[in-house]
Length: 441
Image (cartoon, rainbow, N blue to C red):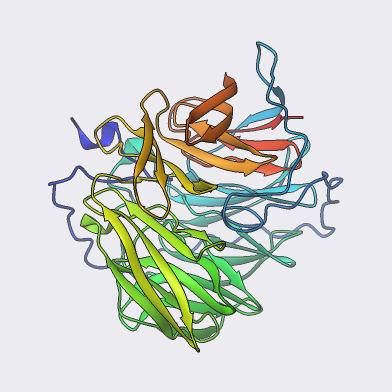
């Protein structure tokens, strides 16, 4: 099978066994397009929709869980009410939503665009374009961007597919600062581009970079200045998460060759466990379970899956691998834990993905279901809002007995790899070229 008939990130990948050509040097420098001048008077913000804001990759807690209620599990034959639907340029960047404004990114030929949209109507409020000279190795799957923006106070921070980290004034789109992760900082130039979503910690923004001596870097939100850079791992496509191990704040990061954690204050390494995916293609975000301090990590490309138990010992953390399996492989998307079971789509790299239920502590496969392909999830109101890769939205109740789908409707098309975003009862969905808002109340 041609590798490009089934791959992509949100995300993308080559076929196991095929070599990935080295990128070598960074693409030739291009003079960045000047951002459009901000309007003399900032656009009025739309009325804020009820619900917890979704300000980063993975939502308010970066774990795809939110405190929404009132989600119905019975829909008319036509499906849930579509509030608006609009065309959007290429890409898989998951939206963020706050105070009635939705922010995301999309691609155009040789350009990347950051866009602010009225979350109630879908109308564009502002756009800011910048030049981008990177070309993916799977062009029919798109050229990104992949990363989700980050709302940090009055700022919006984005990571482009060629490693351009930018900070904008949230209200107007005025460009405040830029850092070139590939150029200035010599970060890992991956075959399918940069895909890690930035994370905020206090007055910092932290991103994986994959440069020698600067595997992970922290920048000051105010002016983009470097706060710290540490370690010597190459980068992958995964996004980091903040965790708390019995009072110890840590940033868990999947890098090329290890799952590890650093002190977010200064970048000092806290612990490390080997984890390696071929071609550096590890995409999914690690899943943290604070109730029992278990961290789940998984990838395709011979990475497999494992669960690590973390225990605080004084000011140190002991990391113990509880189990590993090469049979379980989360290609892209996200995993969700409900009770003692982890649910995720295993496989899909040239084979049929299988929705899998796995005991968190033992790794025992409880059940596997082939009728649902690659899927992404948001947990709210005791339900899993589920979107499969073909664009079918579902309301489901997972359990050790099975995956009961209470409602489903085909709303998007293929390559619907971007996880749903939920603010109140409003779901925001995206496939490669379309975005829509759906009322689930």
